[in-house]
Image (cartoon, rainbow, N blue to C red; front, side, top):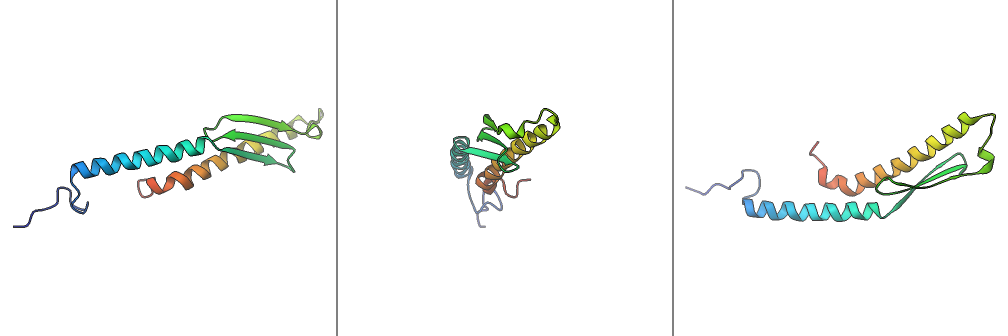
Length: 109
């Protein structure tokens, strides 16, 4: 009789090997996540009228508003510009995170 692998479908990998592999992947993911948190991401709205800069951990680092974007008669326009810039910055973080960490979670969801 041939000896069957400890975990079918795992290429004969035993539990200790699986744990080592899992730890290695966890360390790689943590390193890549740390790399993302040290980066800056910028969202811009309407010809840079509003610029929102975030760190990779989604902390708003700066919010620049050009004086000409401030119209006392149209505060809704400024609100829309701020929302647009913030959402674009956050989307950049999401895309970078997916690109960097997606290879580890591919097929898990």
